[in-house]
Length: 385
Image 1 (cartoon, rainbow, N blue to C red):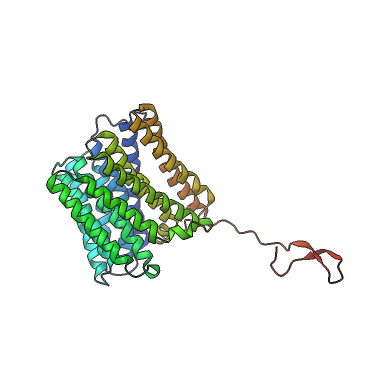
Image 2 (cartoon, rainbow, N blue to C red):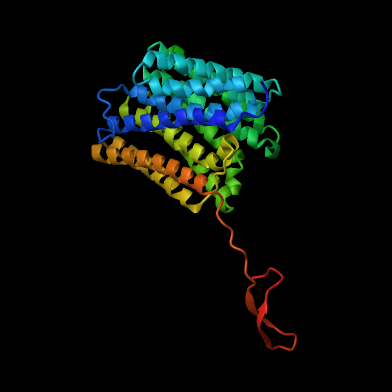
């Protein structure tokens, strides 16, 4: 049934995504070999990846698209992703089955949206959803995680680039959308070719660099970063995301295949944290109020987790490349704390509501009289000063 989806139907879906985030971060601490609130034993690293990728980020992406569609049946898609992520730790096969259903329904959601008008931006996002579905199916069949990474990357990169193209549609110069569509097709062919040949990931890396270059050239973030407040905060996070996408691409090109640990860690976390989480931070104060029908006012404190996210990721990757285990653990633990801090900060800002605006008091200033003297204590009633 078409129509606005009530908030009481949206919140449970978002909560399942939040639960997946908590599970995924707890697993991350266990994989780092540091203290975790709930010991996870010998849990497969692939479970952590899938919980974070589809249980958390996938649920958020899917929920936002469902709200845009305004059809209640489509809530099954993000609900399946969130529920699947919460049970992966105990029943991996069932959890992956839920994720397959959720991603298949996300493709259907995009198809329904495309019937309103198939644009280049929508086509790019449909490709992204298809790669997400492919990644889940590959995981379900027991494929190695390193072989699935290009498909996960395709899901995130094409989804986010497609949304940026959609938002910048009116300001893009002639040919920019066609270029974005061409790069998306090239990336798609490269990902499929890597799966078929079992090698050649360097070509995917080259296309990540091309996608980052497109964003840096055409995204409005390059101009809004010079403003202030929320526009500057969002733009700074988006520009950081572009840098991390370029780092992932350059690492893949120079390092070769993902089977080498430092290359794998750098590419995977530059994409999933540096690129994707930075984009989520950038869009949260803009998108979440529309999704949840609650305000999420921007506050300067949002900069703290944004800066720490980039610092933590840099520390982690330096530790991994240099073989410094303790440095790697510190960077990884800082990332977990930073993501949690952002969630808590956003929740507190939403609960507090918009900041109170103080009424402006008349300002008193000294102004020269026409006679050359000074008039002391005259209120500036013209809004100057």
